[in-house]
Amino acid sequence: MSNSHYRPLDTEGTSSKNIGNGYALRSTSSAIRYHWSKSTLTRKILAFGMLVFMLVVYLVWCALAASSREEISYAAAPYLKLQRSRQTSATSGFSRTQFSTYSNTQKPTTRMAMHHKSLPKSSAVSRAVNESLVVCSEVFVDSRAYIQNRPRKDYEQLPIIYFVTPTYPRREQVPELTRLAHTLLHVPRIHWILANDYGTCNVFLDFLLNKFGIPFTHLSSPMPFSYRKKKPMPRGVANRRAAIYWLRQHNITNGILYFGDDDNTYDLKLFSEIRDTHRVSMFPVGLIEDYSVSGPVVRKGKVVGFLDSWVADRHWPVDMAGFAVNLAFMSEHPNASMPYKPGYEEDYFLRSISLKLDYIEPKGNDCTEILVWHTQTKSRNRSIVRINREYLDDRSNLGALFKSLEIMGVSVASETEGTCFSTVLFLLPKTEIEN
Image (tube, rainbow, N blue to C red; front, side):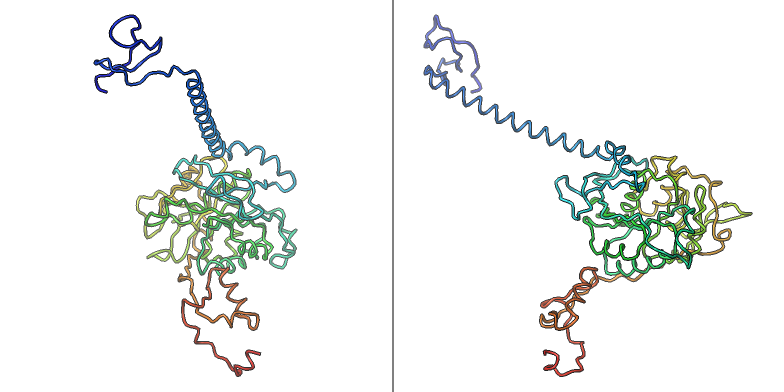
């Protein structure tokens, strides 16, 4: 076909056959390879087939275009619906707008997770990939009648502390959250934002949080998959970023923001100290790396430097638990955020709110007291206990016990795997136990 070309047929001369006023593919040898059929019926069939083909192509194109528009509107949802969500918060001051994870088509994991949204990617210090969150459940009413032996109403004039706790599924998660909750039970005017690094809502965490009577928001905010491959992983960043977005989404500009990990130990004095933060307050944190302490250096009541065993090239070498921020001050910096850069999360966050040295307010008696300790629980993998099925029925407590432990991610019972169930001591004869 290299010597072939299209041209109109000559119908009045030459040796080629006259086939009408159509077009034919001719070679230089004048051999006709293809020609339009003379049959009217055949022409109609071919024309109909072409129309059907064009219709199918058009329908496919429409479907692809609709899908693209849906994705675009989905990505813009946090901005397009922000004003509407504010208008729905007449009674509580908060919106009940929920968010979803991963896929546009994924169904909510609980009845509380209803409206689909994705986190914005407008951070001035980092660019997230596929960030998302779910508001699993929220309670804004403080059901504690007394706090520190005083009626709850005695504290109504205090600013609220928004205590942000990043957490992730592990064997020690529930025990550490339980311990932390019993500290927060003694703190008035607090809203606990618990952000779980998991793709779906954990129903047991909802049950646990509701049990204490503290106002809370339970978020499911998984780390983007691309960052899970990095060494070291930027653990907790997605959770803190989700909490910052939640505060911004609800237009909360009054109160104090504090990032409190679930494995730290807190002196109750810390909360009364940070509650009057005007811009940014700082204080020492115990048990940090080689020096066992990290915090500001204070002279004559002013911060002049920092003590930390890993300063590196950080402008603000502080620990995440070593500062608190007034939300009114943070609202002046709409791009405030935190990067996915291990070791630099605190530094870049403080830079994003344009912190200056003379803004810092030293707490803890001019930073001579340690009010928070970076304690760490030794982590182990979830255990598997091999146990016969006969011990897991309603004749003993073991079935219900291991079911509870499995829900909490602590231990699981199996008939075929794990440690042999040979350390249980039965003091009664087997016949009496079976009966």
